[in-house]
Image 1 (cartoon, rainbow, N blue to C red):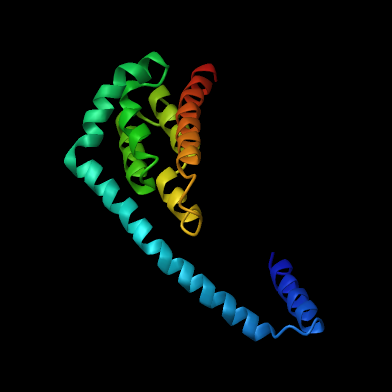
Image 2 (spheres, rainbow, N blue to C red):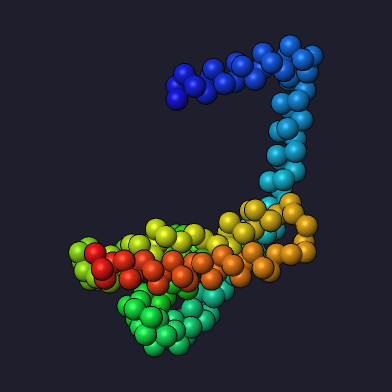
Length: 167
């Protein structure tokens, strides 16, 4: 990679200069657009972070985790992982903290810990990524992708615990 990236940069600049493109102007124009895009992300990211803190500090996540325990247990997901399932779509650092607690409590080789690790690794912080991807997009049509991603996250949780049980 130490040769590929500089070579690619040289090729792009050379081709652009050969076509008569003002490379410096195009580069600075791109930076200007990136700054505008970054600034448009700030309100969305602030909303996601505030929502995460509100759900955790209000006790909603603990109450939901208690309600989900029978359902997740019936689907083969250890009841101890209900809170991890709820926090992971919202917060990567919060779910990492829960994962660490689970590993310390049950040990790294336990079934619960293996399931927790696969849940952590097989899903994404949905709302954070959703805010990033759809920041510059049209405001219509966001519900369906969100529903699909949340359903696939739930399915990956169930399947990852099934794989841990089989292996």
